Image (cartoon, rainbow, N blue to C red; front, top):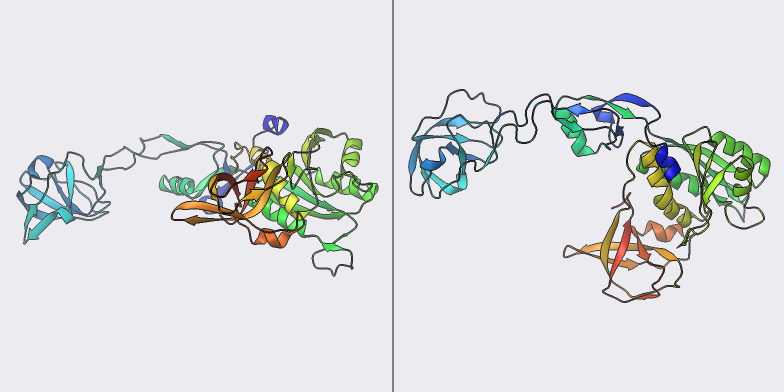
Length: 392
């Protein structure tokens, strides 16, 4: 991925509403418009007072109340307290808030059952952020917390990197459109649908080019079209068969390959190279292989093309619910289901018929990762699990 890393950064930006920026990569700096919080803020419903006066058994006169949004100008007099609501401004003179659960009240008199420390249940002014502080920086991906922070400081329009445009091209004479009736030995083009979905989840904009026949001229023409976008992802045509033409066509177009096989199953015959300055990924045609190799290789590339750092794979550790035995030598990614039982994840591999079995994967919410040097894993052992980002 070094070639993509050197090209990291947004090719173009656009100013978008904060309402429409979810998942985009920020291309500007956002600073606070004032201190946050802009006042000493109560974190509890209770009574604002001087902490030294809140000794157990003490009684203070309540002289009023403050709710969130009230203007507070007068300082609190000694020997008194104010009822205060969560989020309200703490008056000058008060240095603590006693939770209402630790008091009893009769009329205007409030009795305090326990002591309180100075500053207790108060967020001091400016403790979250100072005025003009940089809080969001270029290269950050905007999730719901980041968007809320932008909205809080009034940054309602944000300059963001445009989503990388990722061309998707399937290959093979056996492939027909998804709305066509396949012949007896044909299949519908499900890979384009899954890849388009994975591109969107990864933060890119899919450009679906359809299917190329197993002919050099047709494949070359469609690859040329795909190279007009920021990246090209092909499915099929990368194995060792007579009609697996992707590598040879790309080489004729000047492609430089960095790998043409990976030690995993499913997905061994995956290809990555640069052609005419654009990253090109040749993924195996079997659907599960396509999905696995996309997550491992294409998703991080989309991060880099967006101007962000590549996100780590969503791996978690889980307890194996049923013993496994796999042929060593390759890292296996098995369709599996992870469940959280008593707050501890437990995973079980699903029965499947190999890398063409989409039905099995639709019942899975993860891939169970079996290292290349493990032949047998016993029940109860800790294993790595690659989560399906669309479901978990």
